[in-house]
Length: 326
Image (cartoon, rainbow, N blue to C red; front, side):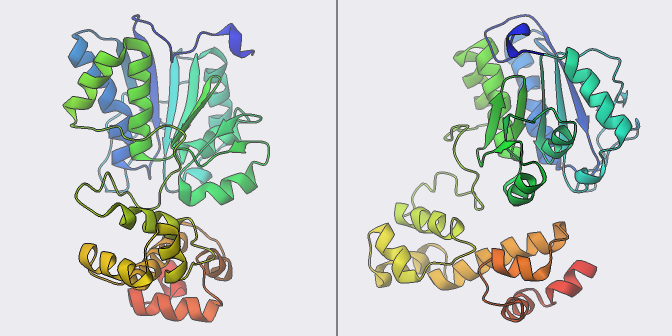
């Protein structure tokens, strides 16, 4: 269906918007909260039910989040029920949820909905329906490379969230809050959006097109801005690590000065922090994916699988192979 045939939900409009949240087991409780709570707060601020949402699961049973907390649902996902907006919240294991019946149901809802999309790993499920083909989209940064390889027809972007026509995607909990605040602002105006943000003492300092960071630095009030610049350089060169001297040059300081900044702010050298950053990125890939260890070593800037295994074992007490098996 052409984009122009349906009015966007992201526009000035005071009529109530019905939203269905399909939450999958393995989702982050923070993603669920970031998706729903801004809408609840908007209703509270305006004293009107301008967002009418329901939470459903694939089979009607409460989906269990990664923290072990179940999410109460009103029932199973019913493709025959109309909704203005369908948001699929996914996390660990979402790649395996794409049964033919579920994908068919999502496509059916999308045909009548004014907007549909995926939150964090929910993007995978939407992509498997074919609804993102030819569109721009994003997913959590950990999955970006695999997502691009699995769906070459999608314009995969590292943005915090992406809205393209009727489709929307968000990269994680904080970007989801950004997305929902944008929905509130688009429909109800800046004043209401600011009131909603104030409910959560939330400072939206990022734009939708800002790249997803590996490390959330916030605004780092009171810290040397060169620290943030150095860390951003490190995380953008995980696969091909820069030397401390090269990072210092780009940050506009000497290597010795950068060492001092890191010791005062973090309590360790730039090199030690950089290694820890790479190892934690590797750990997530070891635990959350089935990517071969040699590929993880290369992605995280280690010269060989053996060097990767030694560094990993020193840091975490087990080899990457044993940790994955556990």
